Image 1 (tube, rainbow, N blue to C red):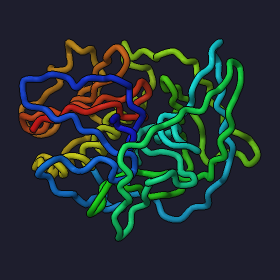
Image 2 (image 1 turned 45 degrees about the horizontal axis):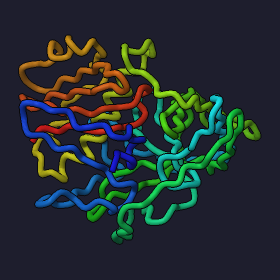
Image 3 (image 1 turned 60 degrees about the horizontal axis):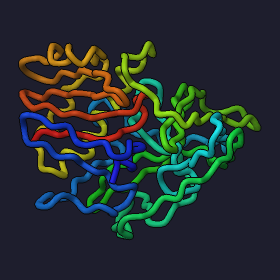
Length: 305
């Protein structure tokens, strides 16, 4: 299973080999579909707690419902969606990543679970049936204007729903591959948002010119670590507060190790063919989080133990 709770997975991506034992962490999609690793205890990540440069979720706000138009810009049929409908396959991140990665909110799919005092239903693995879009065609999604950020509560993976604050965001739509567009929220009433799927696998060969990219990638990686490391009883989770995402830099793969500091926390980002590795060093241990080309979704992780 891919990292569908925090992003759209790149199918078949193997864990990276390294000198230390590693753990590839599959994140269940907003429920307890995948149990905690053997010997681990569920951890609690309060929704209002600051996590490694990630701001607490805003409270209040008025949602602005809008329509999102998914267009097929290719000459062949494309399947939209990498998780259960109706908003499956749509992701959002603030341009500097201050709120971490999140998904669009909508009517709950089976087994999706909002954080609360009770356990989520355990439905096992769920098949995803992408929505076919004909060449040159489109598919319309009614969005209620709210978003979901996933975390662990006392029992399971779950989500908190909230109204994204006004600002600039990266909207991502996933099918066989993921595409993105920049939007401003709240949207203008009556004006739909649109995004076009090309059907081509996007490359991540060089560091982007986007001035917010490195900070956004670092915050997305740090939030993922803050959610997942405690479940592996990894004590380094407590040290994430020392990491400064604004200091993250994107460099060539051959230069990545040069960013490592002898003590404390350091962050480097390097391009891979189809994704970016966000490498976080915490006093001798290194952690790899692999994000999509726009640093809005998490593909896989490689955590030292």
